[in-house]
Length: 178
Image (cartoon, rainbow, N blue to C red; front, side):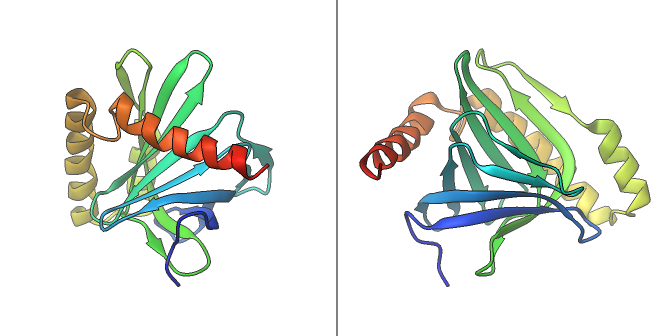
């Protein structure tokens, strides 16, 4: 089954040991092309690995890639646009959900363009505990550098006009469907 525009789908994040990490319910496909899958949600239900549930507070876009080892969540908060980037395997879709392996390291980008690398302790802990293979470590570290270059160069999706085009398409469709 192919992911089609307007389709409702879940996002399933796993850890390297194949255990589920987090699930987002009721996200919608807004674009699917050769290399990039874009989904959007507003007040999505999130289920943590311990069973705890919560709902997202603001509209968000998610950018997934078939050939890059990260994904990007763009959150539209009152104080501005924030980006939360997960170092992860490229996504796959198996008819059940959009799936990827989360490799712990994250980069948070603030509305002013500054950024911070997060969860280095978690990454180092899981690297040892789950015995990340050397080739995975090399890829994750290389992709972290690639991600930072994209952030600093304001390449999509770290480009305001680019994300606003997708955000407006999502919000306009959502209004039409009410």
